[in-house]
Image 1 (cartoon, rainbow, N blue to C red):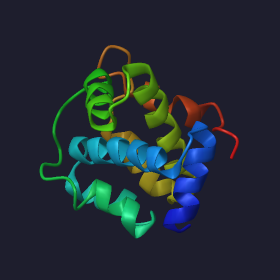
Image 2: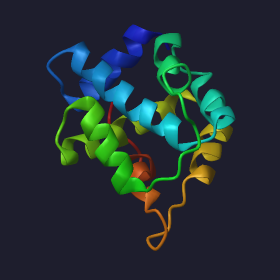
Image 3: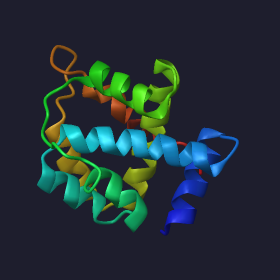
Image 4: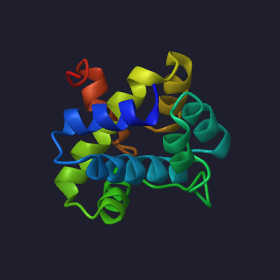
Length: 138
């Protein structure tokens, strides 16, 4: 999948007016995710993404492996994307669903293994709601 196909699918799935909005959603989500997971895991996950998208998880991130929960993740995505919290959370879920459809299952499982999904921990299962529900229609 190339950059135009990735951003086009994301724009369609999110029902956004233009590609620029889709790029902002992808950048905000993947940069923030890259901050949360270890650098090696970010590189593994990003390896199958288009080069321009891959950079958001690797080259654009200065500090990998930070510890924060789902709520802080959504707050950071919201700030970066300049979107309200509910839109940022939904956009992140759709971006992750699209990433799930592009990357190898082992790399995606490695991502899930990095993010505690229990309610009493960091509540990351919310990020994977669409993936677990079977995804968004492309």
